[in-house]
Length: 465
Image 1 (tube, rainbow, N blue to C red):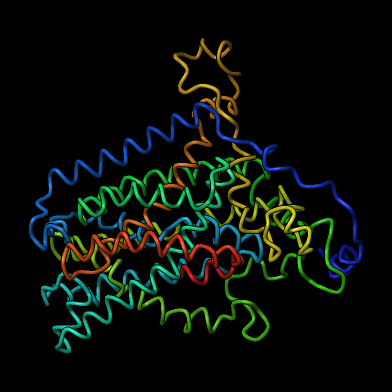
Image 2 (image 1 turned 90 degrees about the horizontal axis):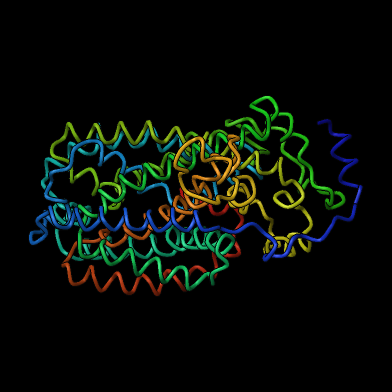
């Protein structure tokens, strides 16, 4: 795409057909609902199984899962602790809006989680602490520091990460099920609190591991469908450069793909993510998050020993490679397939399409799930000879029979639940305080979702990281 073409398209204010009404959008069918029910039963079964097998009457048993975790559930839980529904909305939306630059957040974290395993964890484990506030108390003395850090961490977590994740997950649920956004939040938080507060960290880690597998399976499946639809990598690069909406704003680059969309390290002066900030500036808060945040460190402290803790960090680092392929690139493909909606530039038109005058790139991932994936009619036909009676024997209809929309709905709910579970084990003073905090968090998270609705996908990713 040349500059002249971009200017020419900017000046051409064209009319488009009105956006489809919410009722006309694809919704979940019976097989998808079945998949969702199976998902909830699986998660609850894993949660209650872990409650049954773990001794929760002691501090270590409740807050550190008895210090009996091997490397693979620790690694899966580290990854799941970082990946929430905000990543599926924000990372895909950032890809749709500005290209691959925001993946620097993920790959910077990949290095920092290794720093956790090889530099910080030996100190934490040798000190014999249960939580980060306890470590600060032993290091500097006095309980005021411990209490201050615990309260500050909860406040930051609720009003940045949780509120954004609640909005991102509820946005997807609202699109798929037409539920009220606040009702969806309260129901999901209440169900999650049931096994999280009662089961302690063991329930959280094992359900994290199960839901990590669900998230990766669903996200990689959608990635395959997305690349098949767009025509491969070369078609992605060419199509993204030309994914300009029909209606643009005169004398503005809004809605025009960036020239450096496929660059991670960008101009240090005029770009949205200058490379000095990516390398140096981003590393400071990233080190705090990965190496001293209670949610992250507590998973590693639950490992059997330092070797398993390091193995968990290594596994999490490898998993951090995947969001680029499984989330960000599908978001860019969504812009190509649904250009006028996802890449809308005119504030009034954007408000008609998605209700957000800032832009609609935060709907990129949800649009793929609800419109690209085929709707299912039946789960698992009995045999290949049964296809004529139940569904067409083509590949598309085979996948539709598996209830892929329901699977992706489970992926988003898993990401939403993961955000909530991590906060209930965020502090350590007394189990009663933790359980009271859970109730307060439900109310605070529900209230703080209101301001999250005004954020763009770039702001969502900034808060997430």
